[in-house]
Image (cartoon, rainbow, N blue to C red; front, top):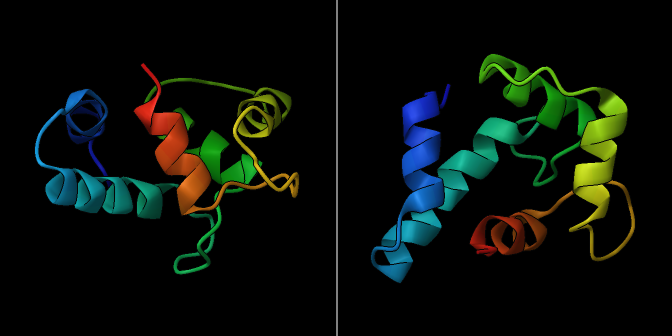
Length: 88
């Protein structure tokens, strides 16, 4: 499991691009409801946020995903996640 401190470090990091991408891959993996699926679902997002101390509802997680979901399938792929995490 990804520790909260590691998650914060990944989000705030402005280091080398390849290292940053690998860190994002690890973070993405922590959010996948089904490991190796390549998708973050609202329930998977809710589970991780809950572990980090944020009690978001499924509806709130659906809204967060909708904001970055390029293809409108209700889930985030790595591209969507990368774009979300790169926002300033």
